[in-house]
Image (cartoon, rainbow, N blue to C red; front, side, top):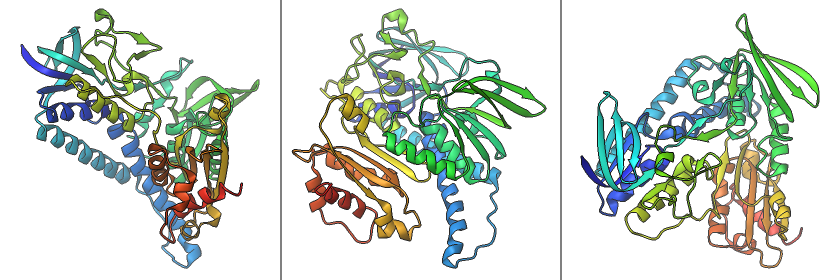
Length: 456
């Protein structure tokens, strides 16, 4: 039986950040993964999706430059080659993770790990054999799996994971779920000429985000030809003659949507099936592994990280959680601070968010002052022909401390990090306004919205 200081179950963002950190702190570590290293984000989520959306943006740009006198002829997209290129990008990042793990002396085991006691892990290897490891500490970073609705005909739908491997673009598609993943996929396919319908149960798309941002992007997608049905419930999926019919109910009215492809994009469920957690007494609450801000479970010596904990299912969060879990497993005293977590949605235009929304401020009875600035007044945005959208800042009316920033517009997923840094340092709108920004640049819009704060 092999002995380890730390054993990591899962090679996604939480696991592949935890294992090297253990080595850096002087521990020996083994990581077990039954599928691909890198997890969802690297293989079936944000990395491949962002690559595809980047190319969709290029298609859009090539169509628009005709207005500037640049004639490039018709734009022809070889979808199969695009997917092949996407796969090469994914393979490259997978190799980078593997190289990083090897460089940090992480033993990688291919198979399915299961806890047989708080300090013992049994691994069923890919060849069918079994091996038992003893470990002083264990980190559970087992990720999540796509959700599907329990409706009639659900087997006729696929997940986003499968959608990203299609070798031809559908002419008509129905996407069930108007969250981040659903809107990004809708943006990609619509940009290539696909007729896309999005069905969302809540009153608006991306329901957890600022309502003003959600309304703006819903309108923007509609203008691109995406049909959006909010407050709509999917009743059944029927398959006949190569065409799928999706029956939805919206405020009592029935609608039947036809498509080649039906995609479930309703989120992820923490995954820990077959891990033996209940057998050793690890607490599961609301379908997720319960941890504190040190990433400790209720069992001493066992930690959680990433989607399995159900705490903000984002790769950037999982990476921090994995590092914190590793540090505490090696005797340090580290915690995760969820106060400043930037997140991006790569629609067209993009969305970048950090901090509280206007709705959250009202619910928590926080006094905030709001400042907004349109990209239509930003010279760089106009040069890019992306003058739609705006920046919205929420700050403390007395101190000016920035509490939340919401951006919909060009390169919003990059711009948001200026706001995140300001918030991390508990900076104020005065700090942003007083910082000299380059000209012309998109970041000037951040300076302008800060300046606007004093006049709104």
